[in-house]
Amino acid sequence: MKKSISIVGGGASALMLGCELDSEKYSVSIFEKNTALGRKFLIAGDGGLNLTHSEKADKFISRYTPREFLIPAFRFFSNEDLIAWFNDLGIDTFIGSSGRVFPIKGIKPIDVLTAIEQKIIKNKVAINFKHELIGFSDDNDVIFKTPSGNKNVVSDIVIFCLGGASWPVSGSKGDWLNFFTNKNISTKPFQASNCSFKVDWPKDIIKAIEGKPLKNVSISCGKKIYFGEIVITSFGLEGSGIYSLSPEIRNEIENFGSAKIVIDLKPKVSVDELVKRISNISKKISYTENIAKQLNLNKTQIILLKAKMSKNEFLDPIKFVNNLKNFEISISELGPIADAISTVGGIPLTEITEAFELKKLKNKFVVGEMLDYDAPTGGYLLQSCFTMGKFLANYLNKLD
Ligand SMILES: Cc1cc2nc3c(=O)[nH]c(=O)nc-3n(C[C@H](O)[C@H](O)[C@H](O)COP(=O)(O)OP(=O)(O)OC[C@H]3O[C@@H](n4cnc5c(N)ncnc54)[C@H](O)[C@@H]3O)c2cc1C
Image 1 (cartoon, rainbow, N blue to C red):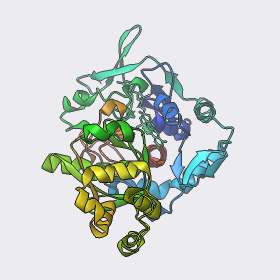
Image 2 (tube, rainbow, N blue to C red):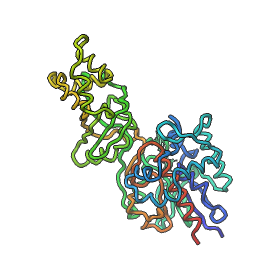
Image 3 (cartoon, rainbow, N blue to C red):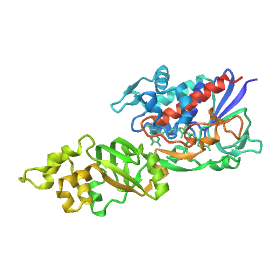
Image 4 (cartoon, rainbow, N blue to C red):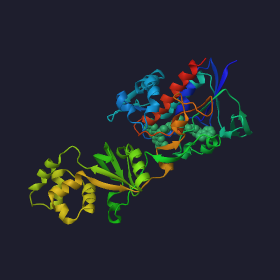
């Protein structure tokens, strides 16, 4: 008789497992509490479905914090392999200007999901909706709440793919931590990542700067530095340029109560060059207008700089440029988990083997955002979930 595998949760990592587990060898079932698969996958596609990134392997893997746990799986199934996998599925992709990889124009996120679902159905995987995991029995079987009452499901292998805790409307609420702590498995509370960051902007400038982007800036926290775009909000800051610093900012807040980030508003121009441009400027128009013109600064940048400096500093070219290139901002807290793109926390990596098996619960595996690791936006989150799913499917398919 075939062995049975239960996949609990039906998001990105479960989709890959459903496609790739060998249904000649195993009888495979997915249990999802929603009435559809891949809700968060579709939400991720709202602003363009960023499936992965086109970076070279070494750079790609360096984006994960920590990264070691993912290296064997990524070597087995990299970003290039994922792109080829999608192409085989009939999903052609293109590389955007930032290096991010998307389905080609005309292919919508729902088309991608449908193609994956068809592969799962062809693979003879049973899909059970309205099955919500509510814990483990004394024998470590999984218990589901279903419309017809609670159900114990006995299977040879269970793979948990319950996701993190952001965007709870997608179904991924992260309300399963105690199921695992009850079985002596340590868990970590969830924290927001790729989220908004709280800044106490001076009240008199917030109306003028809210919603405005700072483009082509560099942002650093501690030793990490990233280039990109950030957006000023009434809450603080958000945007891809600062998301990548989530681990560093979170650490500083945890250790010191607040985090210091430093923005270089003109990262491509040297201090000397900037000082030279404003040292002998014409007096025909106002000083502010003049430096804005010479340094190509917009209204938002000028408002921020004026709010930070005394009049004397503003008028002194060296001090002005120093502030412009080292614009310090204090971040006091992370934004709400519900609005974050992803979370850290969940099951610590110390609780799993290299093959993602729980050390304390044999034949029970955990993959995807349930695990406590961090990755920035840019396709790295979905890639990691697909990579873990594919790697684990291959591992299980090869077991005797
Ligand atoms: C707004 C937004 C935009 C994003 N954009 C991108 C992007 O462009 N690129 C990128 O790489 N990543 C993006 N992501 C992140 C990406 O979508 C997630 O990292 C990924 O979906 C996680 O996959 P997963 O399989 O771990 O979990 P999920 O996809 O979250 O799936 C978990 C599943 O488990 C189910 N579940 C939860 N609890 C239970 C239970 N008790 N019983 C049964 N089922 C349960 C849930 O309903 C859900 O279907 C985005 C996320 C958000 C919120």
